[in-house]
Structures are given as C-alpha cells and as structure tokens.
Image (cartoon, rainbow, N blue to C red; front, side, top):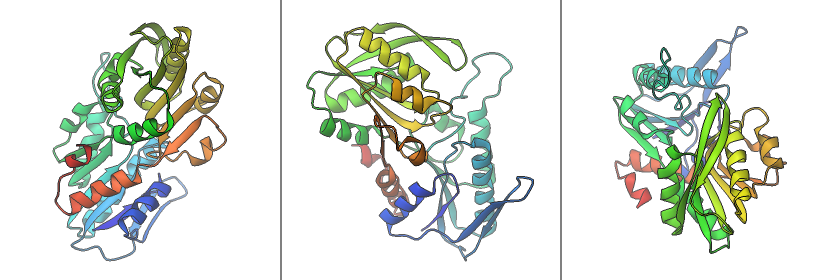
Length: 310
C-alpha cells in the first residue's frame, strides 16, 4: 500500500500518512504557463495498491483534472489497483435534473473517474447517497456523524438538545446525529427564490428554550445556515450550534458566520480552510484523518469498513 497526494489538501494527506505510518509517494504535480497540468510519479509503484488523496474543492475544475491525470499516471505506471480517496466529492449537488436541459454533472464526474482507471472510490458524506450508484466500481461513503457526536457530547453541556435539519433533504442526517445524542428532531422549511438564496418559511418542531444543533453536509455561501440559525433564535432557541462536514465557505461565508447568532460552527478538514478560519472565534475544525486512515487500512487489509460505524 502506498499513498499519493494531490495539491488540494496536503495538510490532510500528511495527517493520514502519519496515522498509517506510510510515506507519501514522491511525485511532481505542476502547471505549464498556459495552466495545463503535468503529473509525474518519481518512484517505482509497479504492482502496488495506491490510494490517491484529492478533494474537489476550489478550484474545483483544476483539482478534478489533477485527480484524473494522477489516476492515469498511476495506471500507466502499472499500479496493481488504484483507490481515489476524495474527502470532498465536488459536483455532487448536481445529481438530478431539477429543471429541463441541465447536466447531471455528478454522473459525468463519476464516469470520468471510472474511465480514468480508478478501481474504488472512498469519500465522506456524499450530498446524495444515490451517487454511489452512478459508479460501476465500489464506493465507500464514510460518515462524519460519530466524530460530530463525540464532539457534541464533550463540549455541549445542555441536557435539552434538539437536532435540526436545515431543509427536508437533510432530515436523515439530522436524525442520525439525534439518535447518537438521544435528541429529538426539528426541520427548517425553506424555499429558494433564486439560486444561491434561501428563505425560511417555517420551523417544524418545538425549539423554545432548547439548544439547537443544525447538521448538514455542505456549507457554501452560508446564507441557508445563517438564516436557519436566526429563525431558530426568533422562535425561542437558547443556543445554536452547527455541525457541517464540508466547509466550502465561498465568498463572504466566513464573515457571515462571524456576525451571525451561531455560537459555534464545527466543520471537518475535508477541505483545507486552515488559513481562512483561524481568526474566526466561532468556527472550529475537526480532523477526519483518523477516520479516513482507518478506512484505507481496512480496504488494504480486505476487512470491513462498515464496522467503523457500528
């Protein structure tokens, strides 16, 4: 087993490498003057099982292309098998046709990864579970819920907790954390008047005098989460905590969170946000390196990955 990292999240790759006590493959990934990506593997990997770690975070297109070229380079270097470890799977929000004449880009990206030569995919908290079916190769979808649950139990002292889904689509994720914390469920009913904008219409469930924990897979511009937190406070919630797996945090998202009523936003390091959030007192980053490292170890040893979540 050997590990290769792309350029999208080297900090996480080094943590996984340290957990597994395995050095990263010596490689060269750079760009020509016109932006064309060049990948070179600088050591012999013939007959090895390779795990390439690369998130599809911003710049999403560059990081996706880098992943595809790395897979192709590994394939042409006679790797025994190739596992694409994608902590944040980009384009997952485009998993169906919401309006006519649009691309289902999650399916296109899954085809690209498969055709490039990947034998397996490992990712964390896919936006939609059915994306696993877009691949014709095995997909291990890991969950950050246990990490969030342990953190909440340790840091949130309130005994009157309720887990909140920021929209109807996130109900299953909020219910899973609620089961872990033995807490009830509430749902924020929202509408999208325009792309990238959301409006809270109602809150389903009693949140008065309760500590609310909003849980979701992605925070992008921050508008939905900030509006949901304000709606909960307006309806009498005592405190609002937010647990999000993937901190995309585009545009002015960090500033919105800093100025919001959210007491603490907890994200993982599936996307490298270290520099962007270090001055935000109400944003905390948890690492998923041990979770991903253990999954890689189990895949390499042909043992159960699902046992991680029992």
